[in-house]
Image 1 (tube, rainbow, N blue to C red):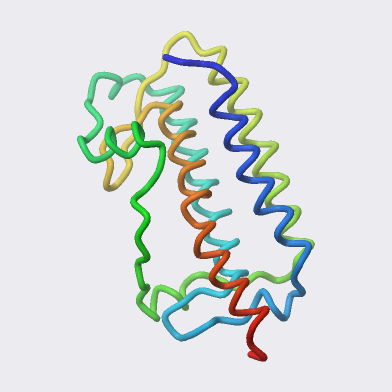
Image 2: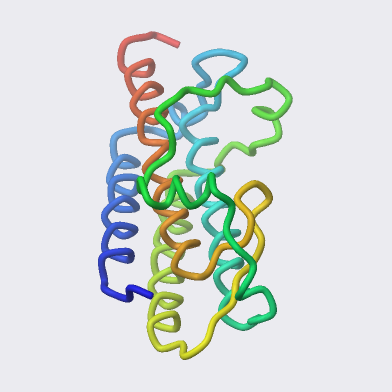
Length: 177
């Protein structure tokens, strides 16, 4: 398996975009939803933090549980990972789902959570690159992924939401909400 720093560098570069973006908005702005079916920018940040922490947990499982190492990844997952991105399509959310994503309590908390997320992911990367054996853990829709695929998926997920981030930022700048 390829163990160059490319995967972690991509992750860090994409995470830096999210961290830098926080400096442009107040907490009040982070809480504004463009409409009932959309997340606020703050909810988007919370979603990314929660999901990326979950992906890191899956990396941990795949590093220490070799039981599923021979289970194949689905064709869809193989295609996504090969393309290094998700399809560029907007998915409108259900208002109930939108309401279940918590709002942030403050920008400092988001900054702290993102910094911890970056530190933790880099620590995990160090463990990954030293691992002699590793297995896979199950993604609900993609089948079984190994630790390197999980990290790639994690970065792709962060990058995928950048368009959504841009749409919300334009709304915030152009409206009087």
